Amino acid sequence: MEEKGLKFLLKLLLSINMTRDHKLFLKWMIQYSLIFFFLYFIYDQGLVYKILTSDKSYITSLILFLFFVVSAHCSYFTYLISSELNKAHVIKKNLLRDNVKLRIVENSLILTSKGEISNGIVKDYFVDLIGLKKNGATTHVQILETYIKKTVGFYEFGWFCSDVMLKLGLIGTVIGFIIMLGSLSDITTFDVTLLQGVLTTMGSGMGVALYTTLSALVAGVFIAIQYFNLEGGCEELFSVLNQISEVSIDNSL
Image 1 (cartoon, helix red, strand yellow):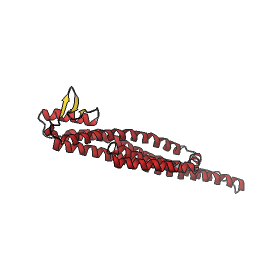
Image 2 (tube, rainbow, N blue to C red):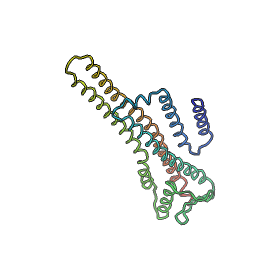
Image 3 (cartoon, rainbow, N blue to C red):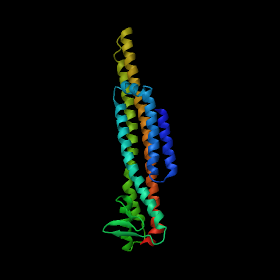
Image 4 (cartoon, one colour):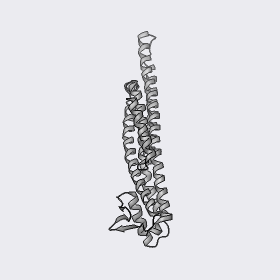
């Protein structure tokens, strides 16, 4: 199983070097594959079962559930931005050629050398930009900033969820200490049996405090890694759109 996983990662690395298409999404796949490999390893060691069963507050289970949901959110928007990056690079490359133009035909964006550009951020941006240029606009900065603001939410959601996971970890820590300290109130005598029960409860509380904190930190870091990649993809996309707007768009109209 581990050998197959390593071979799969090697193929992904080679595919990134061989093609530019969906490079951003392939980077996310490598990151998530490494994360999944780590999770499988600790599961195989029985640590996942131990952590989940030791946490009486069920906060660790909630963090794990949130991690997979947020990762699915990240994968969707990473693929979306990756597709838009592909379109932006195609437009940039083709506009450097002679007699290649961008045209708006019945609200569709047409690249004369490639055909219609599919719906998405890139199409909407150039449709709006070309319309403004034809109406006498001299700058693209304002419309570019508008589209940048639209995509900020793609990765801001991830940073928010990462912070929420850390807060959940702190809540679990507090709950764990409450369980520990609450058990001390049960000590009325120095009976051995009673003390054994108190120590067991204190150990359970310590497990809740430590396991929730550990789970929150690990999940938060893994989420941050994925959304850092997505944020970088958004920045690259608008960098390419800015280059096209400054250099090539006027000549293509």
